[in-house]
Image 1 (cartoon, rainbow over the protein chains, first blue to last red):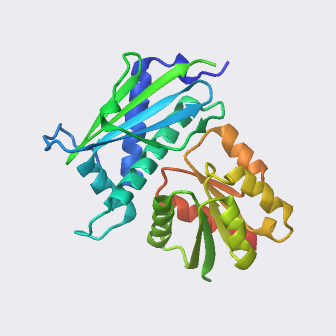
Image 2: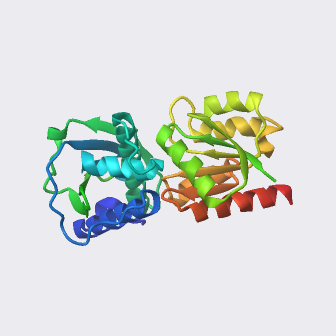
Length: 156
Length: 128
């Protein structure tokens, strides 16, 4: 019987979360994680959520501080140095980052079955919380951090 | 030979990224058209001729699966090679899309080199 995400140990899911996210950041956002935690000025957070349906179902959450999101958006869109990215671009690219990371993680976890991703939803920053049973990882960046949470709702 | 390419994705940011990656890769492209879903893409294809189509799967209005089914119904459009560009790398999804007529499949995240090699392979096979 094929494995599914519900049968993976939490530590393994957290490792897959981190590895998938780093691969996405390096490949499409031309960004390497910082080797050490970096102190950064607190700024506004952007929280995005994607519901997924498959075997099993669940939710994927992504939180990033705005300054880091702006830099990733500039890298993704190929902005010239000093060229400012708009709020619309930042939110659009952050949604796409969430989408690609969720797809990469779920492709590892649900390799034997089809899954469906809902469109990314922007959530209020204060809605962020990590359930005790959810898998979580944090990736340090030069001017902020990315946090990811995979909350598996049920086994099919 | 410079090719004409249609990029179908509901994310304007992703369409811009793919355009940029095609440019970076050095792939010889004379025209890059865009559409935000399968329905818009069919509208574009009713007016413009293209050598190659790149399409996402998850899109509103008409998704990638429905788009491929529509292309297959048309004698001329079914000859145009389609490369699926998706976050979903499960074997079942890849097989499903290839079964619907897609000629190639690239998983996000991808590098410019990965995209270019797929584009070149598709065009070589088509013009062989």
